[in-house]
Length: 345
Figure 1 (cartoon, rainbow, N blue to C red):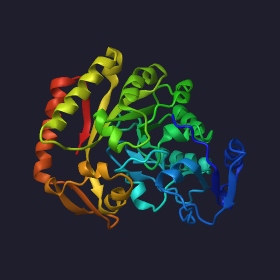
Figure 2: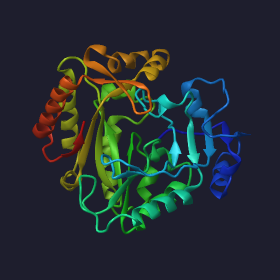
Figure 3: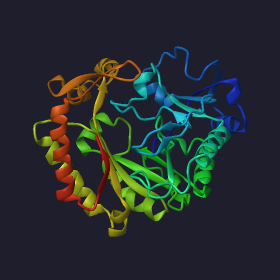
Figure 4: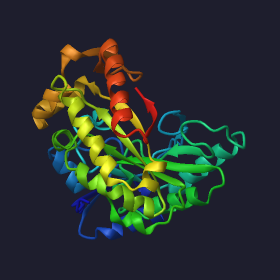
């Protein structure tokens, strides 16, 4: 886990409720500056990684929209935070903001109330689907890494407690960090943690400032023992080097097969998402992480796609991607047949 000790805390006036004040109290030496909007930050004169290391933002999330997903979860809950300590070269959150430090939203009670009202309006019992056979699942970490946020505010534990106790709802989030503090919470299988995995040497290049793949794999048994449901998230799958990516994923699957105990394998499933990249992010990475772009921006394998937000993204050519998916599914069947693929695209 990174030692996050911000030197500057930016805050909006409406974020300084009890939660906000408690966060400020954790960092008494930090300079404080009031801002008008949490998503429109002043020019800070710091580079990309310095901002992520030294700046924390406190805000109030005004829009409590709950969106349908159907993939990682049934629904995407309102964000508890935005941004991350890590600087992953493909991060879709970074591509939407010029600067992107961790922003914690302090109106946790509103988040909980929104989810509770939403789930209680849905038909019950739920018809089982690939997200979960019994509970309605809510992704609580689409725009941040909850494993980091957990150590910054007790509000995340409050959210965990809500899902643990709820008769119809279950939480899920993906992470690239191993936070030992999470192991002291007993989620009673009502929180699903999804460790993101890819070949280790690729992760070192593109998963900037995150925990190693080896550390993430080694933590899976521990998190299961602590009461979490544990899945893995092969995302993004990056294709490179002719057949080399296949060999590297075969090695990764073998590492997983050796590391996990039988009872952990029995409950573990995966989701698989092939890389989508972005033109703006490509240009930014040429300045901050150009070696990563040699893997991420490969026009001979990719085609353009305009996103729903109007951005110009690139993804693998649809005909090639169909073959890539077949290859990936074949590797899973050969090396980790016990691992069900929840969805792949």
